[in-house]
Length: 151
Image 1 (tube, helix red, strand yellow):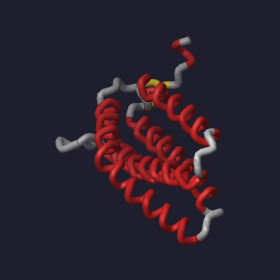
Image 2: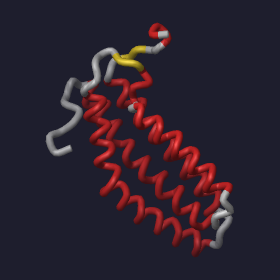
Image 3: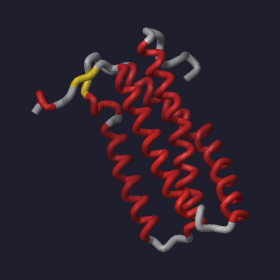
């Protein structure tokens, strides 16, 4: 079973994590856009503005800490490492929880205006946070420290 794990140089995990966060962010934004695009323009604009404000708050107060924790974890992994180590075991559990929550929310009959805000907020936040992983990948490929002292 151990031979089935694809091993990569540690710096590739930063790129994989960034792509994953970006991909999920875009998927959430597309779903939110599907709901927003059916609404009158004033609702569409207002809900999008609310999502951007909330995303800024979530990003600043929650996600920067989470991303920096992940960057430090990745930077401390051995080299080479399993491709699947881009996420911690706890992170995989969180992914399963979030997917389940998303399914339950969509099937709950909740107002699509609320769903659009939740999905757009998370989509923007994840997309912004993914930029940290791309910067870390760039730094790692140049032999620079991935995580700064202030992270």
